Length: 252
Image (cartoon, rainbow, N blue to C red; front, top):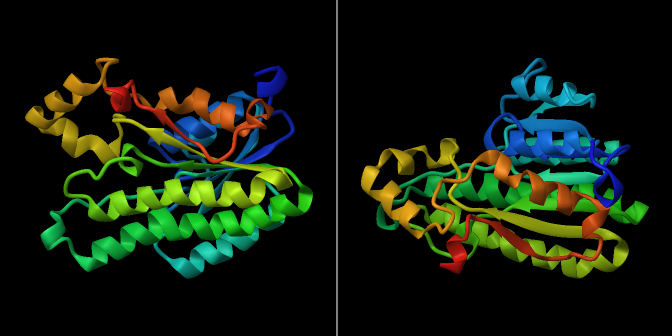
């Protein structure tokens, strides 16, 4: 368990996309700091690996299933979560679809924007309203390096993640004075399912590694410290930032 300004004992954190990768690492880090976890994913059932790891810290875990591509389901989820009055909301659920811009299917564009941006706003609006009523709360988005750059063959993802950066600032501008901190973490090139295709491409993987000053792909657990920081009292005067955790990529 953490201590002092990083101690999350007595809090409840919602983590979307919690079943694996970055979301699971975030949920585990928050639990280790003392938070009970409501994990949300498209296919998260009781008895999952993330539930076992959270409960091993002595914290409670509740599994919730939601298809983030279904706007109506997300709206209903927002109502359910707002009623629970969580202290922390981590908007991490996301997807990526790769195709050159000239041939990018509109269905792919629409799905990525719904999952990665529209659903995030809907949950933030619902849960954020309950936080504003109480005068305290922490909202953390998972942004991306493509919140700063355009990427290749992922126009929908780049647009959505750029939108997340803007949404982070917009909500912070309105809610900071009312006790709700809104910030984002921009992971660098992390070894997850989303980057499997890049890591499998020997030439592309080599070019990526050559630009990362840290000299390695990131690991999901590299996001743990930033997550706890932005969820805790340590960040009470931090508003509207997009914090890169990228091994130095953006500084190169």
